[in-house]
Image (cartoon, rainbow, N blue to C red; front, side, top):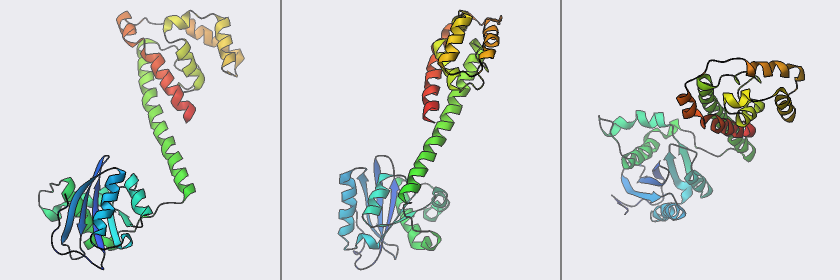
Length: 262
């Protein structure tokens, strides 16, 4: 339910603090003199966004005269606000955190008080902030691609570290066999031959065929690769091998999918 305090605001700006989350948002309407006008919560849905507009309309203030502060530009509600001509201000979380003491020395907060603080920051510190506007289509596409590339890089690093640790423990022969562990041919090899026993059961002809199928350019090195695979290796505890037997192909398939999308 809406909670309204004081008089309605006509013919002036409305300051709106929006504390966002994945499935709901807390809203605070504040007048330029600092009086609290309304506080309510909306779901993250079409109906919830429409309620925000409906509550705003009760004050007779057009969306163009409403200033909205929130801590992210990466939420569908930001797209809604921009499309409906609200003035949007994205305030860094560090700024909000630094201002929490204005309502109490403890710095304790709730979603509702965070929304109120965001509105109040617009009232007292708006000159510090730059109104937000979306980038152009090309820039947004580039940002999305770069974000995906960075996420893939981090995932590849994380999974390859895990794969390396497992191989060092139970199956070290493929490490460095085809160069980088994240090379596609390395991952295909681990999927096809996920254990030391499988690798040592290869014939030179089998390995040559595998290298040809996966475009390995160094044919003269294949006998040396084969000799490396066949060289005696310290034998790990069979119980440990059993514990990790499904992990090597799983990690290799996961990494291969990530590498192919990089």
